[in-house]
Length: 260
Image 1 (cartoon, rainbow, N blue to C red):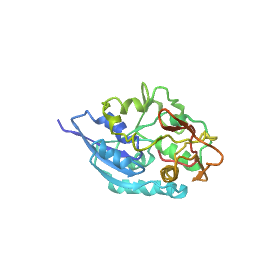
Image 2: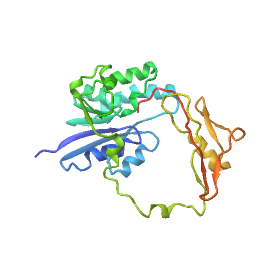
Image 3: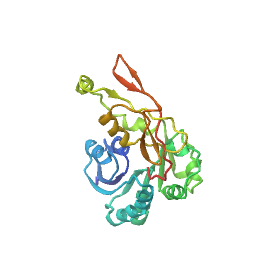
């Protein structure tokens, strides 16, 4: 029997283990993988065992991030592998490139799209482009109207129980000796004390705060205009004396158009 070739386009850190959980046990599937350089996506794709080609990158700058989407889409059209089907998640770039190359596309969407906020023009365009996928796979709790209102055919939407996290931890085997390798005797274990976001839009952590923590000690940071700001004078994190752990809660919020 001829193997089925599947094109996987991984553009965010959650994607390597999500799709490893989807296709990892298929012995008759030839995986052709492209990866976008975004935070730890490349490293996690390598850890998940994928052989891949790196195409495109993400940007912190809002304008560059938005402009990079059509540029990477053209790059995918020019370099898309010859595959029987494409698999992607919250990824208009792969969906559009698949259509341009005549490749059927299966697009995964999680529950994050059901946040009812006023989306930017770019984000609305991404939603419409993603809705043109050949098939859609979503959690059963997902409101399918979030796809159909952008033009998706209800007959082409397939649901499953649970969420995408259930897929990528299904084959997880815990390492009981993991904590033995953590440097508790040398370092204080720090948990990021983000302020609770006032916006319902997608939140992201700020690497700048982490760098400042390890350089100057645990301080409370937040983000203003996308830049990490030291708030030592306004907030003091609590220190758990028994576990030597700095703990607090919250998040850094930045309302920007995103492609996953």
